[in-house]
Image (tube, rainbow, N blue to C red; front, top):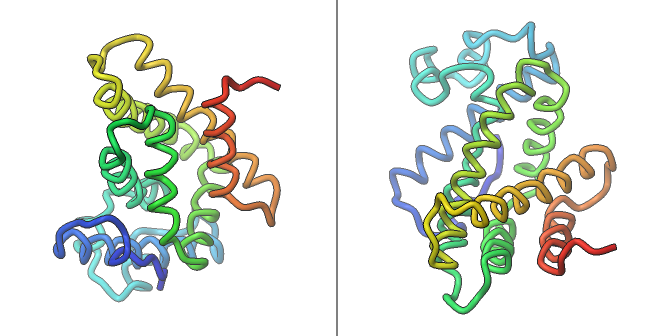
Length: 202
C-alpha cells in the first residue's frame, strides 16, 4: 500500500481522508500491475481483484484506467494550502509555500507512485492526450488562487498568463525529474518557482 500520510496534511474531513486513503491504495495496486503487465494489457477487473475490492467499488472511485494514472489527491490539498498563506505574500510565493507544506508530508512510497504515474503519463499516447485536459483544469484552479491573491477577476488575462507560467515551470520541473533519476522533485519545483518569481532570467 502507498504510505501517503494524509492525516498529516492540511485539514480535511475524516470522510475525505478515508476516501483519499482508499483511492491511494487502489492507485498503488493499479500502478504495480501496470509495471508488471503493461498499461494496455491490464484490465480494471484485474486491478479490482488485486486490490481485493469489487469492480463496482473500483469504478466508484476511478472511472477508467486513465483516471487511475492521472487523478491526483494532492491537488485539492495544495490549492487549500495556497489559499491559507498570509495575505501579504505574492501569488507565486503563496503557491510555493503552500506546495512546500503539502510536499513535506509525502513519503518515499507515495513519491515512488508519483514517479510511476508521471512516467506512464508521458509514455502512453492515450494518457498524454488526457494529460492535456488535466493540465487545463489545473491551470484553471491556479488561476482562481492567483485571482484571489491579487484581487483581480479570474478571467483577467494577466492572471491567466501568470497561472499558466506557474503550471509551466512546475511541469518543466517534473519532466526534468523524470529524465534525471536521483533528482529531487520537490526541490526542483521549488527552484523553478523561485526562478519564475525572479523573472526567469538566465
